[in-house]
Length: 160
Image (cartoon, rainbow, N blue to C red; front, side):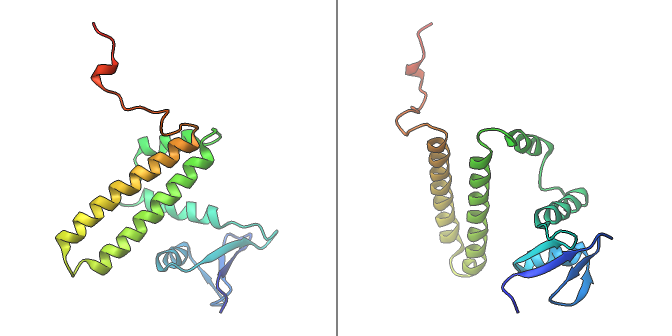
């Protein structure tokens, strides 16, 4: 078995799992995602990688049925990053944040039975640390050094 599963997409829009030697549905691809199975979707016509478009299609189906994950405001904010100078940095920031969140969820599932209150306290401290570091990285990448951004206080404002 190869490390990465290959799914072929035919012109008739059908998906073929080369490992199982059978056609599969988007629900089957979603199951692969949920299981953490690495895969790629390739167009049979030109071998183009269609993985992202298939994942977006799955997300669209998830968003239109049931309780959506993304609010309209959140989607609008994400769209504003496309084509801008911060697009790459935002994508990296978002990816790192989601990976950290997933790791934390995994640790929570593993440690929940031991000492729940201690675990919640550790998670809260770690969250604050992760977000502070992510914000520092975001500002640094945007050209702000730590000394360039000073906290605002009432004493900074001009007298009335």
